[in-house]
Image (cartoon, rainbow, N blue to C red; front, top):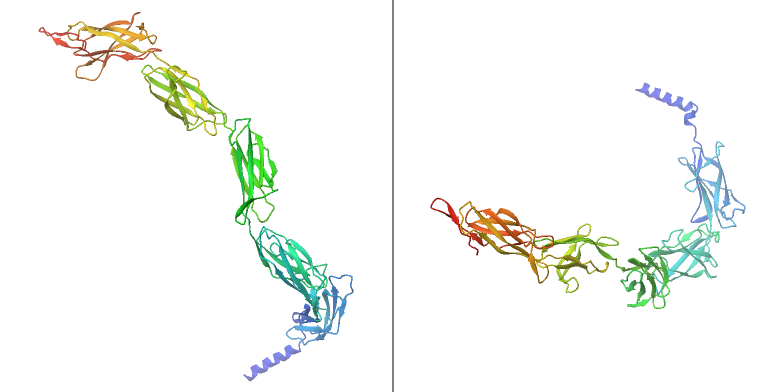
Length: 555
């Protein structure tokens, strides 16, 4: 055990005797800071970081604001003992003759004769501030502004503490108050202290809410001897005054080419009542065309203009207020120029069975009509006595309309659209829908006796009206003879017959059994259809020889 200790001791002795290798050489030192203490502004303290003790220190203080002034040399530093690579040097009673923010350069040498380098912090320089430290006492007469109290009066005073410890008022000093958000770059209100350091400043309205503060000495060419200082923010709120803008048009609906007068009123609410806003700019913008109108309100807050119109126009009035105490107001009014309407492709048909069909389109010059009520009117003579028989609606995608119904009287028809705010009324042309009455006379079935499956003769006369007071035989028309069995409801076709020049017809048909006969006319180009009542009964009878006989009885 004793032998092991001897070996280790020898090793330590050998290591202590060897010269220091390059890996263990002293690191070059540097300056870490050079400042004057806030409590002792005439004392400059320099801090070093070095493996080798610093033996020589001097410093140069160069003014940054008075750049033509001579530098200040600081010597006679007292060095502290080095401890863990850190060492300080202090020079006292440094009292420059010019108030300034001095930039410090340090010239230091260690025991090996090595120069120490400068390692700056975030400012890239060392500072020795030999400045007057200002203080601003600020107060505001109000924290809320409104239309009747738009300005704020700021009062206060500025005092200073000299580097040597004296205090006093800072009179005749230019500074500024910041508005908006209280940050540098905000709108500035310049102010100057009086001889006693007091001040009064008026601050006009800003859009709010915003803050007010005061500052002095920040890169200030007016105060190169002052350090920077700013107050706390004073919040200010802005009270908006209610306002309203109204528009009206007279008339509000004009025919194309006629004029309308648009008038408006701009008001504000004050002490609970509405009062006019005079001499204010109002811009009128139409949604049709480019006729922008610029007006000003009169002493009563009113404005107006007159225009001839050819189209419906929406006018929008805007009051873009420059004041922070109001919000922008708008109002709109639509002046209607109704559009002409027209009926198109109208067809009125009247079939022989009395079914009237009306169809067509209701159009406007700007668009198609949809869901518009149309009165379908009837007149016996087409001149007067018009009555509405039905109301139909133009509701197709192309503004089409269609209707059909049974009408038992000939006459004349027209369509009437009464119009609305946007569209003018219109009445169609008159359409004739007229047919003459027809009827069968002296219809009979004979002979009076016939066997089953034998023939009978159906005959009669078809007449028509040719005027309101005269009838005549209806020549050259085709009629149909029909039959149904007794006790059944189905009618069967037997034969066609054609009328002669007097409207007479006669046709032999087979008697298939006891039953009823009728004749039917389906109408002509200008006549109604007609038919008999189907009460002509003709029985058939079986004879003793197995045959039937029939006697036609007209009832």
